[in-house]
Amino acid sequence: MHKVISMDKIIESNVAIATIEYSAWFSITDHFSLERIGTVQYVSKKEAEWLNYATFKASDSFLHSVDVAVIDKQLYKINGIIRKVLWENNRLIKPSTLIIRVHKLDNEFYQVLSKTLYPISPKRKAQDTILACYKKNNLNFKSDRLRHGYISDALNIALRGEPRLLQDKRTLKQEVNIDLAIKHFKVELIIIDSIMPDINIFSTGVLAAALIILSIDEDSVGFFKKLNSYQGITKDERQDPVEALLRIIELFKKKKGFEAKIQIELCSKTIRAISAWKAGENGEGYWIKRLSSVDFLPDIRKMKQLKKIHGIKEL
Image 1 (cartoon, helix red, strand yellow):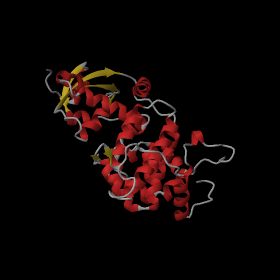
Image 2 (tube, one colour):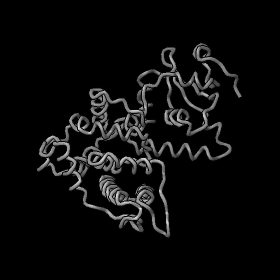
Image 3 (cartoon, one colour):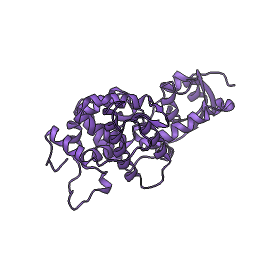
Image 4 (tube, one colour):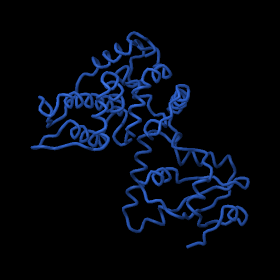
């Protein structure tokens, strides 16, 4: 094990490998963040990989090794961004020290390297717009699911029944006005953020369903709280609506097919599950053997009527 040294010593002595305090590494500048590294699904996949690595007894040296760049006598993180989030959220045990490999780079190569290691989503423009809208509407979300801005497809499904990619451009020539959409869904977004939605549960389809249903009935947040806490029940080989949807979510993670259509189906099944949940434990259809889909366009129409946005072409 290398002796723990300061960041100043690293820069001065041009060491290639060293051990530093976790807090010292944490303070090193990021030129990129989770807001830049692709979709929620990408982040979720990478988090799952690191959590899996941590189950192996001999993984510590690998888990606790990171790379940093020295550019003009300044240190910058090269990797470790996903692990940083897991460490800070106590999903991985935070190490007291880290082994760092130091690379002398120029800024041009550093930018190329960071974009290669953390692929930027082609939807980045939409995310920039959404983050700007958050700021404009004084929305400071705490949850990873919302604060990074990956909600464009969910907004489109909630307002038009499908992502922009599948919309008929002949009849829906105008794209959804993101600024206007966030303004009208502000209350629902705040409610969703308050339960700290798990990104492994609140995929695009589930988030879209939450926006629709909470607009109609805010008390439905009780369903989403149970879903977010994995509080489903199985009884006599049947599941309550929460458990039935949790199983569908897990099943759909492995489902092959066009992702946009999968999310529409997931939105549909989420709304079906909520309908069963509202019926109560003794209600017809509460205990489910197979969660079916439902036409949720009537729910969208009802939501738009309640919000008085029916007929607005930008939505």
